[in-house]
Image (cartoon, rainbow over all chains, first blue to last red; front, side):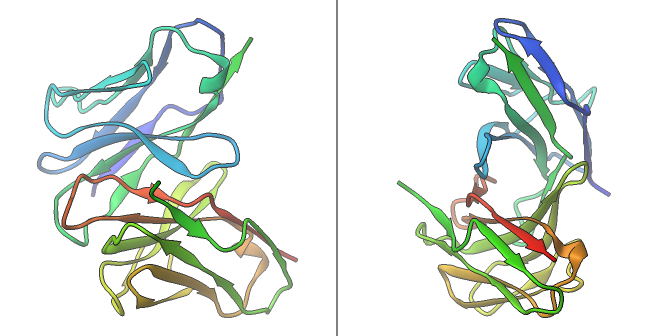
Length: 114
Length: 114
């Protein structure tokens, strides 16, 4: 079946460090891929997405490239800030069917130290 | 500003009580979802609905039921609460007719069952 695997946290970095959070997936066909972020005390919100191979999603300085050959969608940011402290979820949507479910990874907690 | 509103941020109930969690969205979305979020387990889908009076079981429906009498409202019901249902509950909605794959989440309801 379809699944998403992301690196376990917590990940702790100093401000201005480079961030990578790994995400790999298993799916039949050509899924759409997403990163969601959950700030403390809030629900999840979409951070970025990519709908086909080699697409790059970007938002708020974060980027992720849809790599079909490695079935990966790693999240990167060149210089993190304290305000980036949150839980990050990788997710996939396997089809456009109305009853299709989005499948989430288990989440990676990120702590940024000032 | 588009919004998914969950009726209670924090609830404390006793074992055996009937619990209602309410969710309302103002985006005219067809699809609505209930997830629970637990440390180390990520998000797990309980039930979803893609139309009024329609419901589909997710991955962990046992011990829960749902109701969708109006398009904007999706209720999660715990018929007889148990301590293993202590969790964060997240409601989400999405559009089928504008299928970008994006889910819009509420802020969550943290339920403690004593």
